[in-house]
Figure 1 (spheres, rainbow over the protein chains, first blue to last red):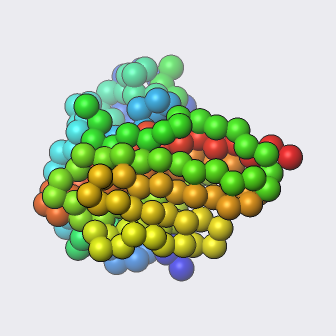
Figure 2: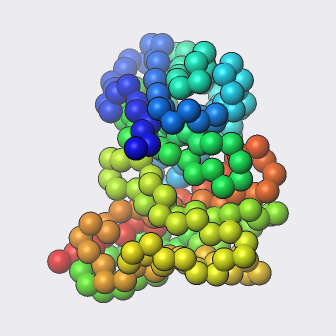
Length: 113
Length: 113
C-alpha cells in the first residue's frame, strides 16, 4: 500500500526559529514535492525534486529551502520562520512520466507565532 | 490568472441527492486531468484520471467527464453520502513542464442529512 508520511501533524513555532518538515515515502518514487495550502488559494508548489540531490523551485520558493539526500526522504526547511508561513504543508511523491499520480501525505499544520 | 477554475466554490446538498462540480482549464498542450478528493485534515486522494481521448470515467458513485475541445471537465456525484463531504480538487497536467501541475482551488461540498 502506498504511503507518504510527514513527521508532524501539528507544529507551533516562534518567529525567527528554524523549522524542519520531514517527508518520507516508501514507494521508490523519483519525484517528491512540497506544497502549501491556504484557504482561497488552493495548493501552491514550493519546491520539487526529481532525483536525489536535485531540486527545482516551484511557484513560491521564497523563505524556504529543501534537502533530498536519500531517495525516500524530502525535507522542507524554513530558515527563519515568519507569521506569513503559517499554513498547511503537504508533501507528495510520484513516479516519473505523464500519468504518474501524486500521492499526498496527511499534511503538517504549522503555526508561527 | 489561474489556469484551472472550479465552480461552484462551495455547495450544500441533501444526503441522497446528486451534484455536479465544474472545472474549466486553459492548460495547453493538455496531457491529463485528475480529480482529487480531500477530506478535512487529510491529504488529497486521486479519484479519476482523464486523458485526451477519454470522455467519461466512473469510480463508484463518482463520474468524471472531459471535453478537451472546450477544455471543460465535470465531476458528478450520485446519491450523495455524508462521507462525500470534502473538497474536490481539479488538477491538470501539460505535456511539457517537468511534472508540474496546475491546481484548481477546489469545490467544497457539504452533505447534510
